Image (cartoon, rainbow, N blue to C red):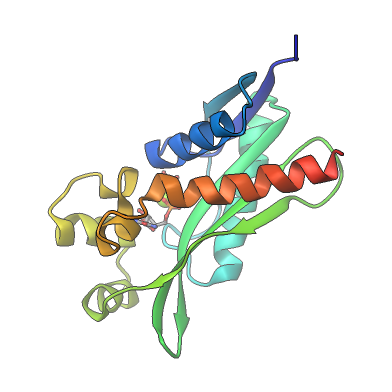
Length: 177
Ligand SMILES: O=P(O)(O)OP(=O)(O)OP(=O)(O)OC[C@H]1O[C@@H](n2cnc3c(O)ncnc32)[C@H](O)[C@@H]1O
Ligand SMILES: [Mg+2]
């Protein structure tokens, strides 16, 4: 009988939690207990740039792990990056465990936002609420997300974060080999 592995995820967002649960089930981690914890990211509500977004993911992973004394903490954070090609959505994840090593980091899918959305983010609005009014769907950020809306439902927020979780768990397995 394998010991239960407690994984704290620094969010109550259903898409993010589903991403962790699905990724771990697919990887046959049947002995894991995934627990969502509301923690501060200590960055802006709408992180701008890779650096701030990664920092948010790391802060969430550390705070979630500490909050419930889990063996692993995972933080997932969405942000936007200004580029000469337009405003690009970015997504980052971090995993903190009991070692003194740096948190593991992994990035996810990226795509350019349409100009009318980008303009509203540049004016200081958050992507989540902007998507709610644009898509006329409440809680869009907990379901398909901007990524699902603008990719015709091919990649939703959970599957996009699921990829990041696999990159994190894979690195964690490599480190523990
Ligand atoms: O409760 P938390 O974990 O904070 O979940 P969240 O949906 O707010 O997610 P983030 O803080 O990681 O994302 C920062 C902002 O960008 C929004 N966002 C990021 N990616 C998105 C996506 O694919 N679709 C819709 N909103 C997105 C999100 O709603 C926030 O306003
Ligand atoms: Mg948020």
